[in-house]
Image (cartoon, rainbow, N blue to C red; front, side, top):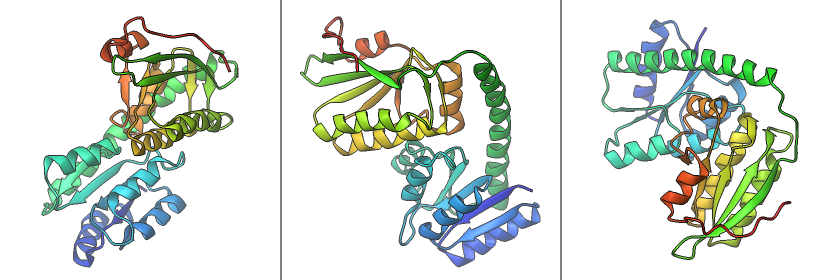
Length: 272
């Protein structure tokens, strides 16, 4: 049975949603605030989450950010439910990794349609991702050192860019090393990071979560984490987790350099 978690601080709205979805045959979990909802999500791993934005203790944005930082909850479809309906609100929700944004007031049919579309899309994407994952795992991808710094460059406005190139496999065994390297750049301040994935054959949810955490840290210090040259498996993982809007992704390092007007100003190479 499909389990849906509803996080909503207004009792009447929460009960209304529960009644509608139980009539549709869904198994429901409910929470009256973000803190309880986050705990339920981490304990039960529901198939989909519907979450209000403005709530006491922990708002919907913080709930989503925390879920996207955890490999075990990274891929759960997430629908915002809110009376805040401006374009800025919508963009913020989607940029944090939300899958949809349903505004109040809503009709039962709108709620059912949003859930149905999201669950169907998730099922199709999971099938495609599983097939691609089998193909990748059947190929050889040796466990080489998790990353190396391949270059440092400077833009025409003297903003340093550190280029980091993961190699082989990026998973739970080595993703923390990459995250620490990016965090060091963020803590130093005044520098952007490009993660060049041209030699990365496989990434799991732990690797993606490490990049999410690192990206959020970079934003806190007004710096930017960009990614380039991802393969099909990684691209599908990003899409499945609704993370394709979190990062600035380029087809290649050439496209990145062109976008930032770097040209051929790449400095010396240094391996770690």
